[in-house]
Length: 130
Length: 291
Image (cartoon, rainbow over all chains, first blue to last red; front, side, top):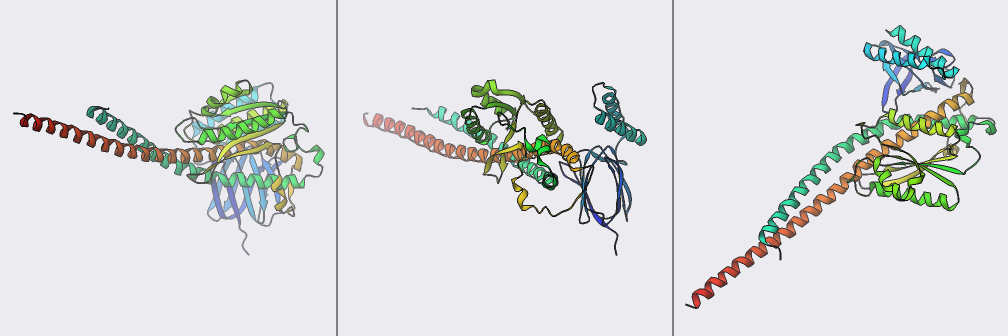
């Protein structure tokens, strides 16, 4: 029996990625990383800044996301996100810029605890990319 | 009567106008295709988002404590209307149709004695509304600078709405935009986004048993603000396709009218030229006869 399921990542602007042959996806869910295999129970969750790791026959792919919603149902995994990019294709300048913005935001005093947590996560991830 | 020279000038001027409208039609046609593609590409996102929200709101156990964005504030005193129009003119009845629809709604609101607040997106809408509703307009937004519709713009509007909702500045929020049916037909729409209408929930089977992480309420309160931006983005996409479609058919009409006018003027020009020749001939002949 095949161990593959379907993955779809959509942006507001377009369908970002569609793969029929993924074997495992690791997503940065809000309460910790979550690995999804075939025949996982139906689940809805949302994302914090982090890496989506996709394992398929053609190899491993890594994407950076900032936020989004994940739905898994009948072996279809849908990821809705407004900010995603391929780790391999992005240039360093953009990451630097994002990092700077995030650090500025994090330094503000009026920031709520939840936002602070999210921004710190973002900074950590961006640092590892650099 | 117009002299020959005048007629000639008029024909030339109508012809050059025709050239402009024709070029505008071509540009609109090209843009329309792109706008339609964008609208199509954006559809999966908003559909999925809608589905998840429907599933979630069906699953919510106690409606009392549901997020305010879903259930409303319990009052209906202050209405916020977001009117989405274009930034540029010469697109037929596009803007007028939205404004007409919006004004009918405004009238209803004020007849019921409720407070009305307006946000206009797109400068044409502001131009048309400022005469009657100047005091009601709390914000005017225009995305003249961004070349294409992008999600960041929609998110800005969305965030603004949510912030003001959290400050309890309004109870009900409705957006007005044109839905793209085809090139000739665009239907003005009013859509209530706060509180969210879940009338379509019935046909969706609520049999799916999802696991939620974290719990439903938390996901929902995270998701609903995003949904606002998504709905606005969808409306913006639909609107831009409609705008180009409307402009295309308006310019097509204008080109045709200019053609008719050129024909009419040419006939008139030829007639009067012939009349002048005949007159001269008569003069010559009668001059020769009198000798």
